[in-house]
Amino acid sequence: MPGLKDRVAIIGMGCTRFGELWDKDVEDMLVDACFEAIEDAKIEPKDIQAGWVGTVGSSFSGQMLSHPLKLEYIPISRLENFCATATDAFMNACYAVAAGVYDIVITAGVEKLKDTGFAGLGAVGGPPTAGVEPPVPPPAQFALAATRYAHHYGLSMEELKTALAKIAVKNHHNGTLNPKAHFRREVTLEQVLNAPMVAWPLGLFDCCGVSDGAAAAIITNPEIAKKFRDDYVLVKAVKLACGARQGQLQDWYDFVHFEENVAASKAAYEEAGIKNPRQEIDLASVHDCFTITELIIYEDLQFSPRGKGPEDVDAGTFTLEGELPVNTDGGLKCFGHPVGASGLRMLYEVYKQIQGKAEQRQLKKADIGLTHNLGGLPGSFTCGVTIVGRRD
Image 1 (tube, helix red, strand yellow):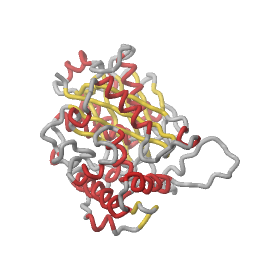
Image 2 (spheres, one colour; image 1 turned 180 degrees about the horizontal axis):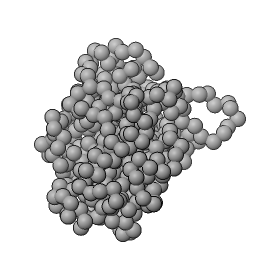
Image 3 (tube, one colour; image 1 turned 45 degrees about the horizontal axis):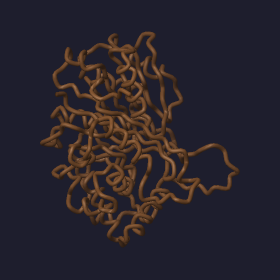
């Protein structure tokens, strides 16, 4: 079955600054991100034939994109798929272009969380129940993964917390180099280890923040892309894996790996032709909603052997100077997590790195990049993995 590999090209991307954007509403942010992408692609709005917009907290239709961009009577779909929302919107756009249905399309993700009077989107819920399940918010759920990881691999809690703290220090350092990040301040190992506790053993700096933001991409096929720019970026794979609550229903769930990560990345690697992810991928932007999540992702995506993630963290493997830099822009840790925008924000970073336009955080080698989103809670996730690369 033919896949996406090298059949879709990104010719423009845009991204707002993420943060407490009190002076901007959803349409303002979409205008900022989308018109940066349109100008980057050197097209005009009238060239866009279809659109996909991802958002979780805004109960709007496709008109939330057509109205601010003044797009005239074209099909626009609004998608929601937990934290993989933007990746899902991007995937739909890619398949439409690969199928030859459209030549030039736009995909965007947006979320407005900071001035709603509510701290984020609330607990992730499922179908109505008898009301006997205790309310367990995300920090507590992922804290269970942290304690289980330490027990499973024979680490002391001090050893685990130190490894997690180094992940936070890394991401905060990277965020200081990015003018679009929400949090742009170095933190020390001691600050992370001594921070107020959120859900033991996860402290304040182990948890990503809440923010506003938007990001967008213009995609087309490689033949058309050549007419617009030489440094377009090729899509190698986009894969989505949705759990069916297996981990909540069966007693084999171990809390030290997330099967949706494994399934989505395996499918993406197969489509992109990647045999050794650690050696072949030059950078990755992964879903560091919590530091323990990033640690588990290293192992699920085959960047580290099972149980060896802390050793690679100690060795600096995932720093800007390391063997496989992860979250070069600061990640969710420094951008916060406006849910519908995060996947395309990650892609924006990889796109800029491949083009050699990531400024102070630019890597020496950035030919193949990966983005990863993980939505839901341990036991049942929706995971999206995208792989893109430099044109031949």
